[in-house]
Length: 230
Image 1 (cartoon, rainbow, N blue to C red):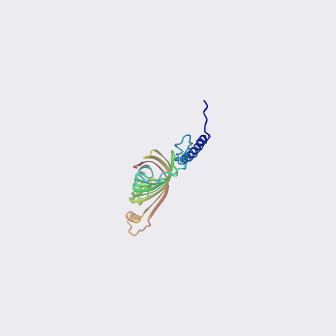
Image 2 (image 1 turned 90 degrees about the vertical axis):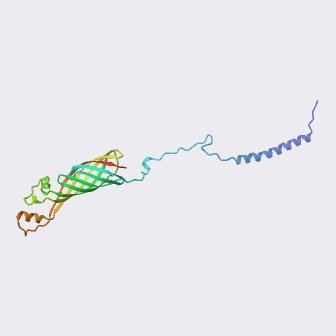
């Protein structure tokens, strides 16, 4: 049996198929355009750019916070001493306290500069000390001098020390620092009532005298321990 196809019906089917194709295509394009952007990190096969860590040498150090502590020292000519410490800047410390040596009791203050920090860090110390009521005869004996009979009556001599030293320090922990230093000190002293001692010794009331001045230099050597509170 032979089946015949109506040409008009075939033409209608072709037209209907063409219209469906034209209607579906814009919808597909609109769907593609309306798809949300997918982050690169979530898309398959995406390539992420590695983040290069910054060089530690180029990073700025954190802001410095003032530290507080105490310093114990022993050496010559300052003797033994204990000082309060303030560390306001990374490269500088400030100290103030008291000291005792074989000549008497005194007060002192100083500055310490640390140019850079290493396993053994260099340090520069500058200090000033004032000692009260030192025995003039004992001072001369320490300096290998011989006091005169008049000088033996001078019992209350105030003297001053200006010291400068270079050394090294080592910090086994954040709160402890050990140090040692050597340098030179400049001594200067004056006795204002020399005439009184001379009059007493010579029994001559009319004697007058100028203030007695003394200055010299001597080596400095010291060892110390620094303890921080924070």
